[in-house]
Amino acid sequence: MTSIEFEDGAIQVEATIVAKGLGMPPVLFMQLVREGKITSRCERGIDVDAGRHRLTFFYENRRFRLVVDESGAIVQRSTVDFGRLPLPATRC
Image 1: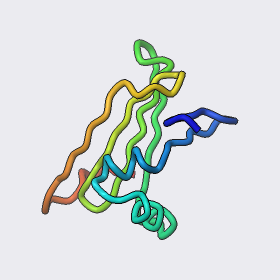
Image 2: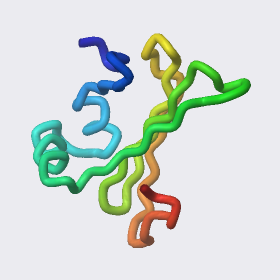
Image 3: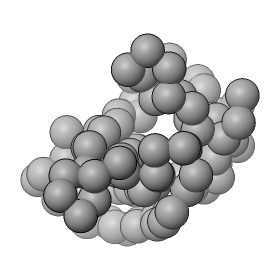
Image 4: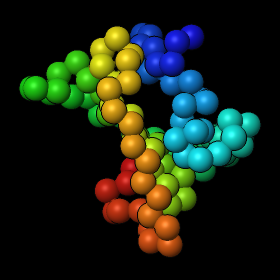
C-alpha cells in the first residue's frame, strides 16, 4: 500500500503516518485503535477544495490532521497538542 489509498469508498492510511503525527510508536497506535481510544473524522472538500479530503485523528489532547488530494498525495499535515486543555467541542 502507498501511504494513502482510496478503495471502494474507503480511505486507508498507513498506521506509521498517523502514529508519527500523534507522537507515538506504531505498535501503540494500533493498540489504541483496537481499544477505540483513537477517533477520526473525514471531510470531503467542495468547491475550490473538490478532490481533497481532510482526515483528522484524535487522541487525548492531541489532534493530527492530513489534507490529501484525489491521488492520495499528502498536501498538508499538522499536529496540535492542546496540552492540559481539552480538545475543542467540535471533536467527533
